[in-house]
Image 1 (cartoon, rainbow, N blue to C red):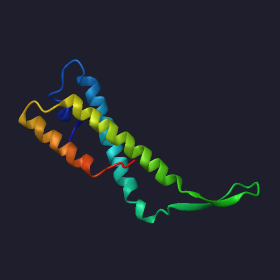
Image 2 (cartoon, rainbow, N blue to C red):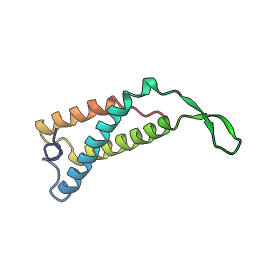
Image 3 (cartoon, rainbow, N blue to C red):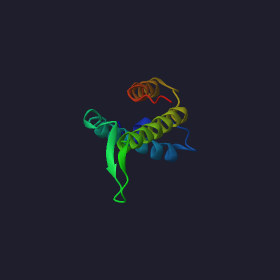
Image 4 (cartoon, rainbow, N blue to C red):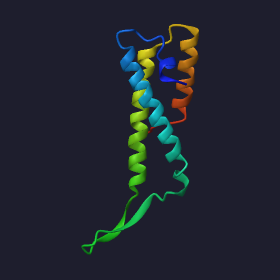
Length: 109
């Protein structure tokens, strides 16, 4: 779905900003989908050697980065949903689509 379609019923005073936010939500969603496919192959921890004699095991930075991206996505999506509202049937369908997409990406604290 195109950002302009998602935001077509937005308040005219913030429509341009809503479309920018929608573009970001779509882009982050695509990135999350690509990275999600890598989750199964990524270990939770990795070995490290800092070259100064320190070695060990640490958290895999992939998960930290993924979690931050996911958190940004859900915050942006929630904000976008607040902006676009559900003033008519088309907007309700768009909102339902976005909510369904958001439900695929839950962040737990």
